[in-house]
Length: 124
Image (cartoon, rainbow, N blue to C red; front, side):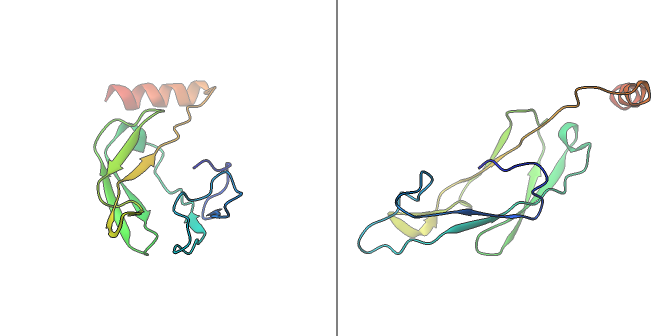
């Protein structure tokens, strides 16, 4: 799901209206559609992309997952969390996998001071 910059703590609704292009595929005579609401939360420290960290993800059932990220996070990085996704249509007691996609943006320019700080950080 894509959101605009500056959407921290904003609610993003995924409608289930059959006419909407993002509509849920789980629709039918005995299925009651409901909108899915995501809370966008951005609180990662600036250095997390090159160091290990833990990402907090609040689930749709109000649980807080602490997902350890031990890899180097790059612009197309994603983390798969088995069994923490949406309920499966064929068996709602089981869940699919949750995928967390990272949108890494690098600066397009740096001051000489920031370049020096970056050199020092990478060389130590």
